[in-house]
Length: 425
Ligand SMILES: [Zn+2]
Image (cartoon, rainbow, N blue to C red):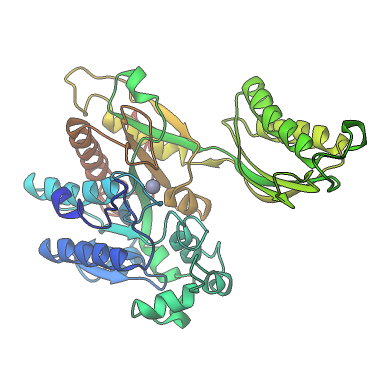
């Protein structure tokens, strides 16, 4: 599977350009459909364009099973990329999910509840600017009206892109019927950051997605000649901005957060003109919500003294994954992955957003598995995972799915009823 995906959307820069609803994306969607057909999975596409491939050999349809108290288990991720992205972010989760189906079949296992492999559309938001658009519209966290009006760098709207891909934009909207089928979602993902190398284990379970937000800082000044204006007569907007950039690093270090000023706009923007107005955008995240808030408050105070106006553009509080589900998966994985001696599986938080976080927010019990990234580099061609670690990831996902799809209303607890690692219901 990996070899077939390798050339799709590869750019001469060395990274991948696989943007939502582009020709490359359509090739990837066809590849996914073919892999599912090869396995005899029943492919459905929801109102948003997310692809769900179901494996259900029990009586009746998937919806019958759900109605009978056997909600499904979904596994998968996304196939799109950021500009010049790496090979693993997204595809590793989709390929591992398909490999998990193969592993279950090789072991003679038939799930007692429906199992789906999912390919979420437009996770990175690289083309239209909103990350996790596929899962956000699905769960009603992004309105179809707002989504359809989004434009890409060429001025193409989301609606036009859908039409060009052969889809009806009027169909776009929340999809209750699809969501009802999903009792549990598990997303395997390459680690984005560097923790597992130091911990010496190939796989981790996610605890939460860090709180994160974006703020716009507008610094006022006065345009004037860079040569003839005395220093004491200047109102240079860039000085306040410089204070923000250095302050962000300083305060983030003190408070155990990360803060980045990655975008700036200067007016008038002439080399020989004193800046009359500077806008800087702050991205702040961290494991502790109160610390992230305190960081932004401190920077807002400093900037306020320099006459700046601060506008919050977005804020997402901590997204906690289902604790019982995470505990259950840790219990399953203890000793099941890449080692003969039982080891405790680490639990990691992450500073990156994911479809699993969007589903968790919508009330779907969700979990994530991270596969070791030796350098921690992500969203770059240097993103990597060793082959044996990828295999350990498949092994881990298979063990989790085996556990989650066992039983039903007549026997063992169904996936909706989460058992603790020690076996208590
Ligand atoms: Zn991803």
